[in-house]
Image (cartoon, rainbow, N blue to C red; front, top):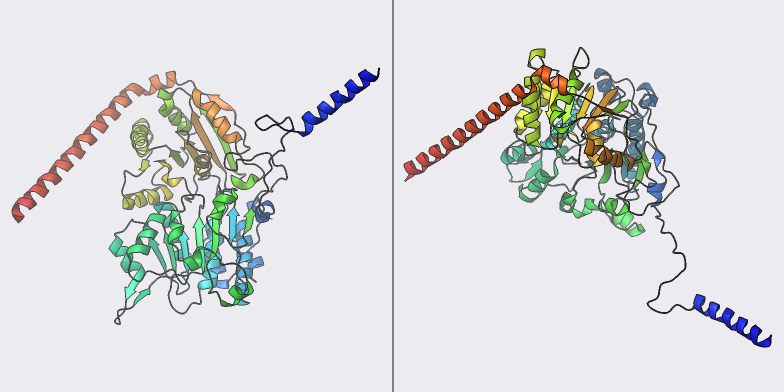
Length: 528
């Protein structure tokens, strides 16, 4: 018995030894601790904005904050109350300006709110209000947007709301020649000094870099506001911003009293990343987040860009937007689009999105053929068209002179075209951000809208996964049987006509190139 007791004790000792002593190279049997993300306090505890667009204050309620002449312009444009995001940002920036006058550094802001919730006016109104009494023109506000079309739209809004002031707005996007843009924003005095002729500058990233590097006298040293509209795009241009404005110095008593004022950064997007590492590139100073949804306490993800995690406001859409999906075979997608458009007696004002300029061009030609007997005008918007023509097409669509506009994704980012009733994703976008921005062209400013995705059978699972990644559910997919409709429309004959049109275009393009070559050769020979 004694020997048995000793043996039992040895066994217990061995168990203890195996548990406490880990041989190098062997695997631990201990349960690994779960890695949990800890968001920065400003991301975890945002300022919540109501998603109900009708809950904003009336203009009378804002008269203590908003300039009376701005209120008059708002009323003249049919606006009698502000949206929640506009009221919140206006109040915050008014407070920031008071703090600035007391010597405090203004905190930067990030705004994540649904498409169509009034983000452009949310920064235009307070910027105009704070800059209107300036004495000498200098670039005091820089607004950076991703594409030309959005820049033109923002420029028009700024022009409208600066009309009662001496403030001047400039636009640099590459739509005009570089020399013309230079003349529009910089003037050389008789004493050979360069002075700015604009106070508010709207720019696309590439063109901004060009002017920073190549335009004599171009200066951003006097910036008070740096607005980044749709902030989750490429941000390489930030490195060209003057160091004084690219990020705040360490907050010390010495810096607080001696450092020159730096620009307050205002980031706006419907798809703002919640990844702290990505947001760090903006070098925000004590930022505050305004969002239309509540952050949940649950945290199960580690990869911040593949999962929504606990920042549910990353992708947001308006309540007025109805989302639907249909399925058909690939060869009948144009017929599916045709059916969607003609299902009611009146064809709605429609935006159709494709994944490429070539696809937009072919589809617009085919759709015009299919709708030729219905007196419907189909337009095209893509990189195939020069900037001036694109602006003309947009104006015609806004004025209802074009009923259906087929576009590549250039339009999907932030553009505000009034009264778009229907958005169709003809091609499935590559990323969820693309889908959100496409759908966001309708259901804007409190008006109802419908977004329909045309899917092939193989795309249904991909689309479902795309939506579930942002806590959206796949709408019921309606299967469309289109063979009989294709026969009724004589679809094959229309495809033949499309082929002939494209062939004629090809011949015309080749002849134009040959004519240019001949002219160039003749000029070269004449010079010799």
